[in-house]
Amino acid sequence: MEPSSTPETPGSSPEPDSPSAPGSSSVTGSDLAGRVALVAGGTRGAGRGIAVQLGAAGATVYVTGRTSGSQRSEMDRPETIEETAALVDAAGGRGIAVQVDHLVPDQVSALVARISSEQGALHILVNDIWGAEIEWDKPVWESSLDTGLHTLRLAVDTHAITSHFALPLLIETPGGLVVEMTDGTNDYNAANYRVSFFYDLAKAAVNRMAFALAHELAPHGATAVALTPGWLRSEAMLQAHGVTEPTWRDALAHAPHFAISESPAYVGRAVAALARDPEVARWNGESLSSGQLAQVYGFTHVDGSRPDAWRYLTEVQDRGLPADVTGYR
Image 1: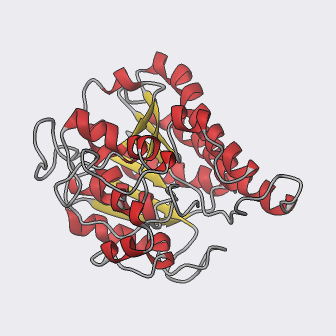
Image 2: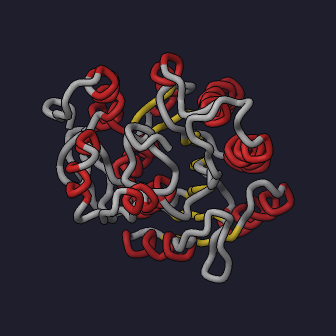
């Protein structure tokens, strides 16, 4: 992850506030009660934030990932799927943790069969799988080929495998929603080199997946979008800056532009807002951001602000201007 701008998949534990309905900063209770979601890659970061916010709106949320209480993934981080499921419960939903390696088709097939057996439907699929080692700022010829190709497998193959097995269940019920989680909007990524050859390619591929899925899902009454958070205060990002969620502003002393950052709750509220929108099909195939959707749906960050990171990066940080979030959050 580029420490100056790039959000990453691992994120900080969000507050279990629910996203807002249009025109308000929050809602209470169960407007997504009876809805079943699969947050694939919900161990930490944006995935955890999304799972919790869907739970806060009353959904049943299957949380998958490789790190459980008994086994860690190659990321070797302490966050677990069981912790995320417990946060979903505490927020008012029902969290169900299932250990799954989304590179293994049989495991994903078994997961979907379980959801079908236990719930009879799948209404929301969030493809947030990542968990890849990244080589920063190296051209392709200096990068480790093994690391780069593994990055693509974790970032691209996992999403394709999960969609292959999950979408037949999702399209059984009209109104389904697929959210492809990525880093950067189409417009931003088209104009900016993102970290390295393999990272750039991975994120462009995920954005294109949403476009392709939109065409395939539309005849079935389902919607697919690509969604990016802004500069995400993930667990790993907070650790890298030597701060915690309550003390994140201390990082501004050495990273002033971190002032535009957001906790994973913000993008979680964006997903919940999409899930409750009866006209969500208007977004089919679009590349969206948490800040953009906050302006449309009226939800806020947990601090009451509405950070618009991608506009800030373009208009302030990338132009080399001093950090100033006035008008951007």
